[in-house]
Image 1 (cartoon, rainbow, N blue to C red):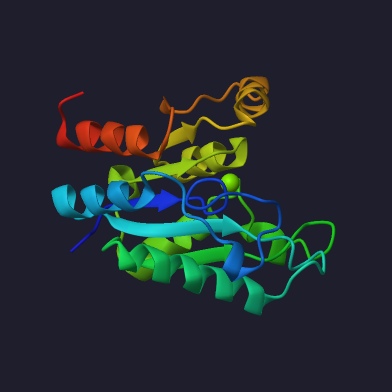
Image 2: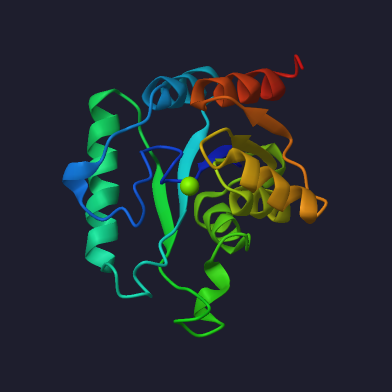
Length: 191
Ligand SMILES: [Mg+2]
């Protein structure tokens, strides 16, 4: 059976983005995230999949273990709120510090979504991507999923970066809950 998924960027979407997030003790979950994930699962059984660029590893600013420790902490904090993430994917490479082949996973490449679709039996045509950056939106569009841009401090820059490429998110959301409400309506066919 094919499942449907909501792909989530990590830093700035699930947790506050303090820049190269590496200390699990600093993790703070953004408002509405656990509630939104619970709704997505309860109402329509979405798989929740984290898709994250972590080039700080390639740049020597952190290790794979740091990335995994932060992922575990996020998993723990969300589980406490009955909000479960099904799987984490991340790309620790960067084209300036890694081989071209390795860096292929980096968003806006759709590679991590394709990998998740294969691993988890996902129907991308019934799935969504949510993130706070232009690269999240383009990644989603490249993978053929509906893409949602979350408003944040960097919203203006991200939106103009999209406009420069003639790309547009399917929806712009003021926050995580608004993005989830869009998904629930859209998936339920009442939009
Ligand atoms: Mg982000």
